[in-house]
Amino acid sequence: MNKDNNIKEPEKRAFLKGAGLSIAALLVGGLSMERYAVPKGRSVPVMDNFPLAILEDPNGNPITTSEVIEFAGASKTTKSSPILVFNYPLQDEPTFLIALRGIKITTPNTSPSSGFAPVPPGTDAPMDGIIYDSATNTSILAVSGICQHLGCVPPFLDYHPGQSVPFESQLIGYKLDGVGVQKWPDYGLIYCKCHGSQYNPVWGGRNLYNNGPAASPANHSLPQIMLATDSNDHIYAYGINSSNAVIRTHLKFPDGETHGAGVKNEDLTGGTAIRQSTRTTPTSLNKYSVTSLESVSPSSLDVNQSNGSIILYKTTVVSNENKDGLNWKGTF
Ligand code: FES
Image 1 (cartoon, rainbow, N blue to C red):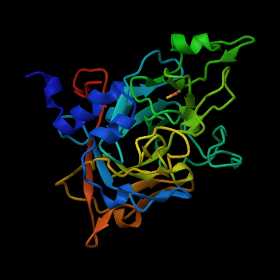
Image 2 (image 1 turned 120 degrees about the horizontal axis):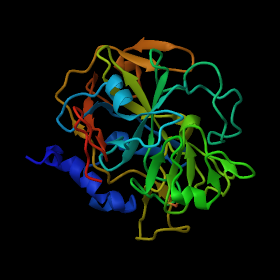
Image 3 (image 1 turned 90 degrees about the horizontal axis):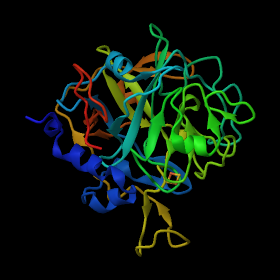
């Protein structure tokens, strides 16, 4: 059997539309509307709560941090790295899963003037929601794979690791060892080929705005998806960093308009929920926070609850590259 066929229909549909703008996701999305999918309002861009989702491979096996580090760990000298993507918080919303070897992504030393300011990492504790593996000195982070300019998705929005400067980035002035030009960041960029938006994964996906050689047209950073682990090293997504919790470009078009004053609401209604899992919800999770690594009850996280119990969803991690023993090949 073709291994690609192992990817079940919901994931397949989500990734086949990868070449389109994310607005297509709204159009193809089903009618289901989960309560967690609705932000409280434009002025309070935080959802009521989120699904607790376990990350699986296309065969339905939970993936581990060590697998992600082995498969996709990028370093300063990396020249290529598979793009790992999973859907969260809705089925049609791609999210990058990025492992960076040799660096602990930490809370910024200085407070950003807004939640979106480009502040480089500090020296202290890991940033909230970013898994840090001290044995390999690796950070694993997840950021939205929907460009916050006009919504391009993978493969147009793509992570280019250290020492792999894409042609498009060279055109705007990035070079590996820039002399009089902009130096390519050590761990590379998430770069959007549609109009040149630039996001630095070491900054937790923050937009570079005008700090790169050319302006980054996106006005917002990539929302950061919060990650946790259980005692088996399995990875869970449990929310979006509240500093930037709206995945923009998922706009509601009451009269079919695509821009202008008529676009009133940033709203995720119409998206399709990720699938509910039959797995047992873990009794505790390792939550990576700015102050410490805590073992917490899932019920203490801001995740979707029904009748007092945590609902566990599942989301499939896929890649644009296959590798021996790790069949995560996707279809985008
Ligand atoms: S959609 Fe990404 S730069 Fe415009």
